[in-house]
Length: 235
Image 1 (cartoon, rainbow, N blue to C red):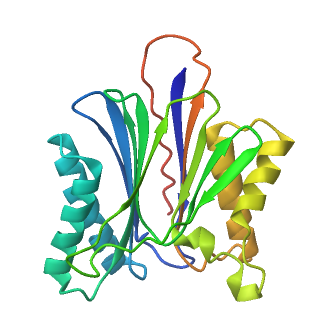
Image 2: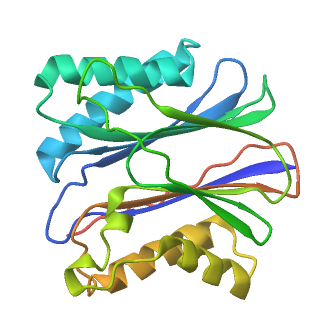
């Protein structure tokens, strides 16, 4: 088996900076973590907030701090910095080779989806954004690494897609439709969900949109780890 990770993200329409920040870090006990934060509102201020949170989280993860503790520490830091007036959502997806599990840490009102074959489960337990108080705790889900497992995580730009037109995006149905029509790669799934969300907003996204896919696939090829990033540059 091998873990495949893909991301697709786009800025809010007519805003030069995304308030969403995503980083990948290798874990000291093996494996890696993907950290996605979405700062309140959009633009440069939101970017500064999400970067503050992500820097705090990845610094602690690199020191071997557990994901949940890192999330709580980031929330405390944001609360202290902004006096509880600014919030930030957070998702951490960690492939932990020590426990042979995938650990999902969520401080995000937006749900995440876990897919196994034809079964698609929405995990929408109540979850509070970081920075609201000193007692913020994440929702943590731990999954065994199994072939075919697909995890879909996103910022609230997906949740709000289409609301302006009275046609909110049904994320679960969109995932099912894409996965039934084909056996998409993680990148194809991320790209398709992003494209659907943007189309519901008439190609003018009302918020920053980020989609993160983690999939356990059949192992192919050699032992080389690979990562590809595409960064479009305007002008």
